[in-house]
Length: 68
Image (cartoon, rainbow, N blue to C red; front, top):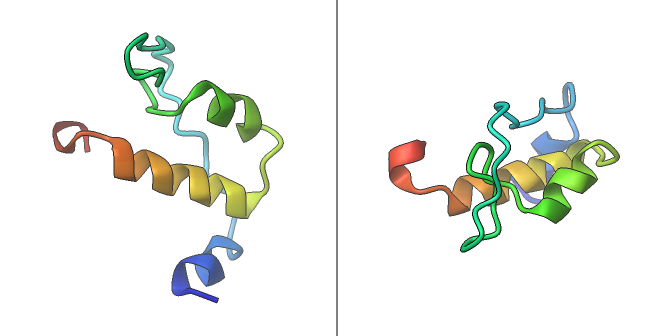
């Protein structure tokens, strides 16, 4: 088990990355507000803590540096 997976199960579930700017970019197919794709947005509510951390990690990897 990696350190990332060990900490993903500890503590409260992470909050949604939604910032209330819900606009899907037709080119990237990502929300311009939270950087999730439609499947990640749809899955968020039912996702467990580990999956939410995985979604947040994917968001961090895809976000342009100027938006971090």
